[in-house]
Length: 262
Image 1 (cartoon, helix red, strand yellow):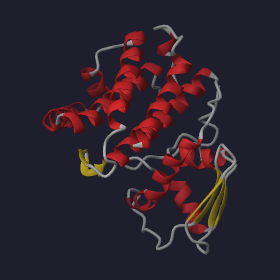
Image 2 (image 1 turned 180 degrees about the vertical axis):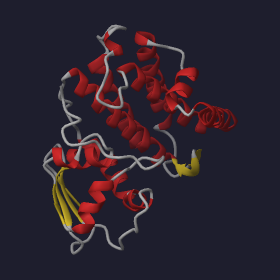
Image 3 (image 1 turned 90 degrees about the horizontal axis):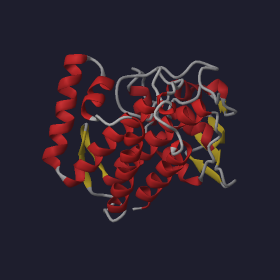
């Protein structure tokens, strides 16, 4: 399954930018909700483990996720729940996170992409689960690259995240209490390699520009106004103003200028 290779490559890209950081540097605060780099790694490590358990041990998966949401109802803080489960910090956390990624990806590459796996809410395919792990790594990795003032070298594997953004067109409207338009706007996006990707039918407006910018908007790592995307039509504008390719309650996209490389 190529998505497992892409997840590993995305994680290795993030690892390379933090592999020389010490414990103090891993506590640097990012622009995302006051999270530190360490908080990001706890979050990624927690949900990577959960996804892996959905394949290895379904009972353990339900125990982990069920226990997490029970604790969440009691504490109201997902970070507290994740921190209680993941007790590693600093360099030890960083090393455990990347070791788990390498082990997981090495096994998932052999999975049938259509295999159904349990998750929070409805089950999903192995392909979708792995794409979600890549998306989370890329999106949360953005705040780390930003905090360190480093420009990430993007690759065409971002196509997985673009497709996830497209597949959540309806969800982005529903989660914000909006009616879902009958037709998705046409997309004309330029990949990091220069290849042009097109999706959807012409006639309901359109979105054009860099695929990385589109991915940044649907993952809410950049404000639409801070990208060079060209958005035409009411349907396209409403989508980009409410785009959310991840599960959970409705989230407000970042304000203009609030997320940028430091």
